[in-house]
Length: 432
Ligand code: ADP
Ligand code: K
Ligand code: ZN
Image (cartoon, rainbow, N blue to C red; front, top):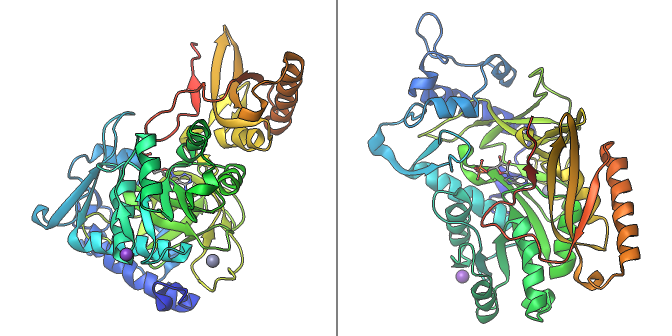
């Protein structure tokens, strides 16, 4: 058996779209119970908005992160409070928090989606799965936890931190699959080396890697180092968390589950749809949620829809790796730069180690970009002349890719301190 739910995963496009329309209209009725959508989803005569075709969705307004903030805490809740059994709250470090609510049926559905993803990636009931990711308000922990349990795998809820404990658990229980964020999967390689352990000897066969942007180059490094399939996992709390889009073993983009979400890709400036294959902002409409349906939610994540069918037989369309978030972009000397462009260049060099940070500074009106990057352990003893040449080569490669001159500062392995949770790629110290 290749599928968790063959009928849904391979549903013929026409039928899938019929199902979407039917679920969309149900969602519109449900959403209208939320204070935020009440007026937006009723016409002038007070009748609920219902659509005759999926194309008509483009006529409805977007929902944005700032709307969720403005509505905090209950503005987007579409069920009576007594039906809610879980809430996830965003960190709020960048401003007002946002809350996302789930009924029991929402949680069951989310769990089933995650199980579908994991099954697609090759996880089975005989796998031993270590969930090395934050539990609690962050959705990555509980989301993967329940999904893997549903599938029947044995779950070790190790959470984040305490690297030596994590590694002992992996070895003691002969763990076969883990869930990690990419920056930690790379950092872990340094710890393994220090402990004189070969990452391949851990015996992992599957790494579920997601929660933050990373490049194909970083994935290949992870796969090669651990000798395992590093499967890309995408999701966001606002529309559940993990389980939105996931790679199949063909590794050609992530299937986005269109029985649960309607996907659009728009130009973030004009808000017009872009063609398949062109990069834009992913916009999602939920189709199965009760407590907190979202209509045309602007994710701020940039990707493309990949044209053509996938050899695995699933009919749900695929999105590319996320190129970055619209809010990760920085402007330097008038040029727009995404951290992932820097990562893609760096990770292409075998001399480059496992962590980097982009530092932005200024001298009056002139901005400078410095890429501080660790060198790989086996090049630690490089002489100063070779070092200078390497930093020149990196500088040139970055300039060719970004069209901005960049200073490169080479650091010994492990000099950039580890952070708990998602990596911070840009340190903007500019004062204007
Ligand atoms: P926060 O917004 O606080 O980071 P979330 O946990 O909801 O909280 O994070 C979701 C975001 O993480 C996505 O919108 C996306 O930017 C990023 N993300 C998640 N998975 C991936 C992935 N596989 N590739 C790139 N970015 C990802
Ligand atoms: K089991
Ligand atoms: Zn596929």
